Length: 329
Ligand SMILES: C[C@@](CO)(OP(=O)(O)O)[C@H](O)COP(=O)(O)OP(=O)(O)OC[C@H]1O[C@@H](n2ccc(N)nc2=O)[C@H](O)[C@@H]1O
Ligand SMILES: Nc1ncnc2c1ncn2[C@@H]1O[C@H](COP(=O)(O)OP(=O)(O)O)[C@@H](O)[C@H]1O
Image 1 (tube, rainbow, N blue to C red):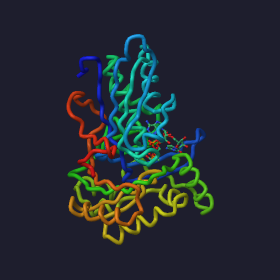
Image 2 (spheres, rainbow, N blue to C red):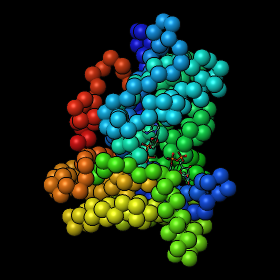
Image 3 (cartoon, rainbow, N blue to C red):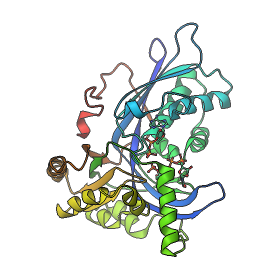
């Protein structure tokens, strides 16, 4: 579905980690992890167009949530994705990328990874390079541990660096309230803090079983939000809270409101609170907003689909004034 004028639009989801177990550090500075990802209804949108006559190379523009703190140079993950695909496919890297961000930057929701996944797919379609699923997955893993999941979506187990994926059966729809922060947390910085806390505790990092923790698998299979809430776990949570102590107050507020579960998403600082249904989500969102503890509060659902082409001429549900989709607020 390339539009007249050569434009492809792809939407890719942000994620929450339902479980994140962190094992030993390897020689390349990566930790062995067991991660259960769930894609949620916060979508990054990447549009890829053929450049105007005489223009070559990759250009990028960014708008939406956190646009001002998103890099516009070669370090932008969508730009890196376009260059990587062009190099592997042996085609010129000529594309104008335009990103509409809804996920917070450095928020522990893999918004940048979603941009990379969306750019890979959009450029593949725009250039007609015909990379298969496996090839796109391999390129995604080179770009970052979380990028393959943004291609896949749904609910999935990630092992190794978090990039070796297996889909997980999840029934039904789960309702989340997200508490966003103005300022992000650096992923390597949070892993470093985790290592410091583990060393200080005198405990060894756990040897990980490369499978979905039993209680979590059962909760997802049966679509039981209360059981899912009890099974949520994030080994990076203490490190994120150590670097950003006010996150504990958001978790406490959630527990005071009787949420089914609450945890920092990945490396944070986004906090994800699980509630039984839409009306509980609205009630909690109102309380969180009134508390002033979060810079933005979103109501979202999961699981949702992975990176997917959308009709470039259809009106976008993106809300220009807020940088987010009205359906998720
Ligand atoms: C923590 C998680 C949880 O899903 O993501 P976020 O919550 O930040 O989105 C991931 O493990 C992050 O994934 P991602 O952000 O793609 O990581 P990468 O770009 O590949 O790596 C950034 C840095 O994070 C650290 N890193 C990442 C993955 C991993 N398994 N072990 C690590 O120690 C390394 O220091 C690495 O240099
Ligand atoms: N397109 C992009 N969107 C957001 N961040 C990006 C992008 N490209 C590169 N980055 C860099 O990647 C870092 C983390 O990206 P992001 O996926 O937003 O966070 P997290 O890893 O916490 O989920 C940011 O600090 C930012 O500097």
